[in-house]
Length: 409
Image (cartoon, rainbow, N blue to C red; front, side, top):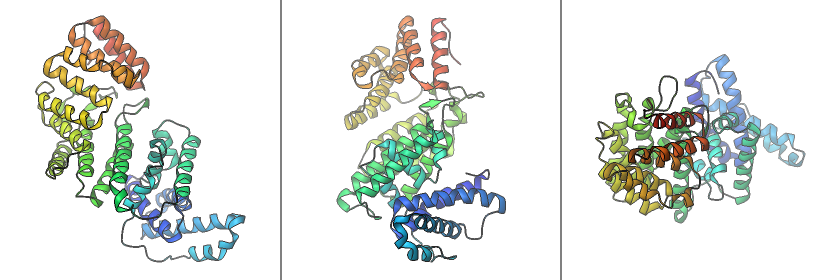
């Protein structure tokens, strides 16, 4: 948005408040969201040149209200709203309400009618304050493509007749789960991108953490909300050691643990401990518990793999997720040897298809088992199937190292 980090952070913080105010005041989420995006873009230029206004929130509300009014005036079919629109564009609109509508916006953007491909970009725009261009760059698609996704998402919400309010009590648990899933997917895409020249998109994972913090502030008693935030913090704590000086991937076993962020580890551990005390355990709490065990271990081999394996057993029984089985196989190999891990991979091809991580894990386990030729073939297959160039480089080098009897640094 702007070259000034403080201004960019402020815009992202204010974006959902402005959108909530406009939607509540004028009643149209889709049009209000467009107006807020235009106001954010205007602010990025104006604030950088002229400095922050005395009342940034009021500035954004005033500009967005004027943009919304202009949009209504421009449409021939809505000329009957001319008088109403004129009243919206006053120089000093009514004071903003004190409450924050971020939680309502998250529920709207993560509507059950929206697939993750639509819910994620809409959440990042409406709640995260990112522009369509920024989101498109993060997901490696043309801006026009991402704009179409956002438009489809807003059209679906409009056609659903979703009121600007919290869901009914009976729908609340399901809708919270939907919000958590979207934030989880955003974080994962940022932590290891699905494609491109970099291992991670730090701004994307950082935005997921920021939104998870906002959600936790609104729902501090929800153990799964707390668990997801803990999981993100405990995972993100390892980020400084995940890449080398030139951006190359460094696997967990080879990371310099002195570079891990101990402050995040402490915060994440405290959060998951707090969540588990509520004795309503969900999948994010279990994943956070696993992450905490990794972060607390002094070394890869010194990790409590027995407890991690037990937690993966529990997580797989809860979710049935084949990716959990993949991670469980790694833990089983650490506890009982590579053959135990390889046995757990049987049948996963039917569920994961030709996924590069399945080939990668099988390659590591075959290497441990001493089957060099098969390990090399799996690493090469994994390298051919990932679009992340850092992963591709690591896997290609790993295949060459195993073939030559060496190691990858």
